[in-house]
Length: 95
Image (cartoon, rainbow, N blue to C red; front, side, top):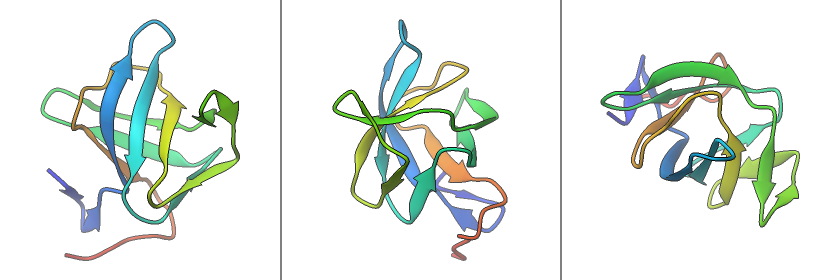
């Protein structure tokens, strides 16, 4: 589940907060920034959205890099261990 169309997941969901609609994501590789299109995919999850908000410790940041644990506002429910892929980005990692 960590690969999609020849690319690797750039992040993994560690927790989901329903009320604010926020995914706690660990960035595994590369970077993700406001305006990027990402795809969340898991056993019952599969949707693509533009990133409109990224936060660390309740503070807005413009981008997250490998190793960061961030909150990302999501338009639909995600689940623990769902993967996040960069759509159409410049970072494609072949397996």
